[in-house]
Amino acid sequence: MRKNIVAGNWKMNNDLSETETLIRELKLQNKPADVEVMIAPSFTNLLQAFNTLKENPIEVVAQNMHFAESGAYTGEVSGPMLKSLGIKTVILGHSERRAYFGETDEMLAKKVDAALENEFRVIFCFGEELKDRKADNHETIVESQIKNALFHLDASALKNIVLAYEPVWAIGTGETASPEQAQEMHAFIRKTMADNYGTDVADGVSILYGGSVKPNNAKEIFSKPDVDGGLIGGASLNAEDFFAIANAF
Ligand code: PEP
Image: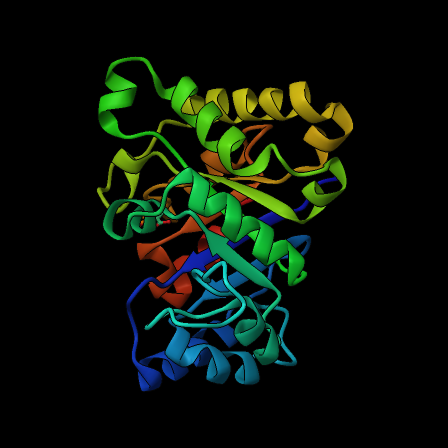
């Protein structure tokens, strides 16, 4: 059966000492059974976070990577670099990467390929903007984001893909998709996967919801049958809040 996952995306927050402090606090929290818990610190703190959590079930993951193995890409970080630290999972396609750094579906397809070649698990993010939802285009947009970046993959590669539906209008805004809106979209995503890869693959893919998940709304969102966890931004910067969410299944 598919896994429940709660992943904290720290974005460009926490210097080294703040990272160490937050990890110390995270270690004190009660770990949920049957939920994979991940944190994604900044690149500069990945190694320290990874080493500090070596004996701990919290997995340290990367927020992004470049598609090239190495070369003249100033300021970028490659899959082999992350792999050499021991990182096993990478987030790709976050809406902030798409909006502020020009990441397109085509570029993301290359990043997904590079990540899988480097044997990473990929948390692939996508989601519609407010204008798409208002125009009732949200399903078309989401379907094309998934198809363009993932549907060239073989079914066997899908076991290393986690989907993260993050409506852009709900990220960092305090505005959450209602549990019903989340379920409706997650069911649509699973059907899109089933239509292309069959129900066995679709039923095995974890689909996370992201967008202003907090301790007070996580339980209702996670109770929906096609919601397999969350990608958490703001609330992942507080250890108690993050673990209240991870324990909300
Ligand atoms: C995110 O950035 O992936 C996210 C969901 O952020 P927030 O929880 O702050 O809305």
